[in-house]
Length: 314
Image (tube, rainbow, N blue to C red; front, side):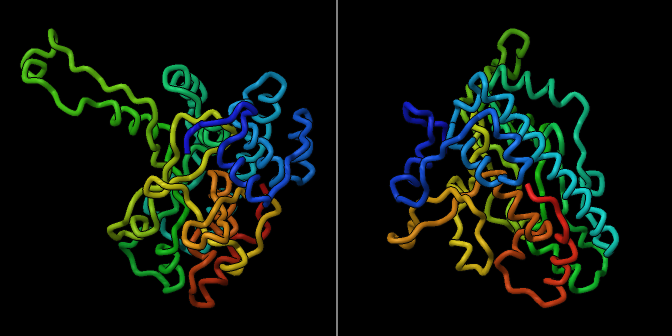
């Protein structure tokens, strides 16, 4: 989904949800978003900020929304550090140990500012993640023998969020010329290679669970950049990630959800995931998203309880 909005600045996705009658118009006081978030109204605060669309950058709203995004990612980082420590304690082997614990990069704020000045804004959620958390990679090293339950975790969609450096590399790749003339090859000093103009591109923020498990895979999990909203829908194979209702998969739904029509059941709706939703679901599953819906052995479900116990709500 792009940044298309109506005159009120609400996203078309949200308007579709209003038409379904599933949610009511919020009555938000922008100056209280952070206070409400700290008081525990996390779901509704993110939901209301999302409905603002690009107006989240308006004077009087941006500072409050940015403070919410930073506090959210501080909690995400605390949870990631907790789960990382617990994974180390049970002997879980990381494929990329240097990226397994949150690793923000020095100077990333300035680099993001330069990128936004030239390309366009990142969603505040993603920008805050890069500045506070950096990157996390819990894919599994499968080159050594492991207990069966721990080995099974590697097939259950471990958390992987790539870094801002990866975003830059993907953007430069999108700008590469599709064809270089012979003159540019022979005399590059006089015949410069023109770069392509990229208005929007799909930033591959993660990969699918098959790729993480060392199999062929079916496609990346991505976010359309630029996007000036507080948060952005997560895309899978070019379409928004949409899942059956939580009731159908045996979990409890959050208080506030972004919903839309279910293309497979015209009379029903599905939950549409944003980047923050994706992180929430993953940590609810102890860092391994497929544990939310996949049938596994009891000892593997016990590991989920060990990993997600006492995590901070965000």
